[in-house]
Image (cartoon, rainbow, N blue to C red; front, top):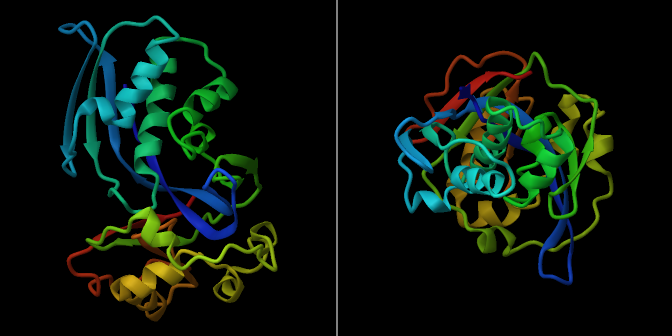
Length: 272
């Protein structure tokens, strides 16, 4: 079975308040995009547990720490199904604010459910995905959602960017979570993202913010320059996704040039 776990972008990100447990309550809109990994799973004829191979963007660390394997382990602890061979072609950059690892895990759950006819409901799959990561459940239904809490409480929304063109730029820069929060002063925004996304896209530039940009841009001017370049190319709206370091631009049509982003990961395509 071939699966194509897709990335997401954040449309706006407001850090609302610090919680007693040390985490922060936020609000954001998760929007699925077409950039994807390729995940293949099939019953194994040679092993009694699982085999794992990877290509594309190099992976590091023990496979047991990979969210795909963790998803497999979680499901096999509750359901009976055969050993499997897993093959991943990694194409979504790491540390980009795109949710690639979370998508891989969620699609693994969905794929195993379908492949072995486990008859797990979407609600149950979402509950299982939540054990793997705060934003994993969003990739079960894989539709735009308004996210609150620590990014784990989802409200479906009727909203579409179909017909617009996305350009995604990921520089070779790592942004740590503590660094992203370093200049954040939590506060409730004057206008909810639920209101903002109903406005014409041309107005988003003045009212839709990603709070992480303040500290990330201060430490990494190159990321801010990418956003500026996207606007210079004619983007209707541009923003960092999540805590970075990827930046996306939304265009009315495909821009003619993206050669301003040497040494960066560059991808794009029509939005659905």
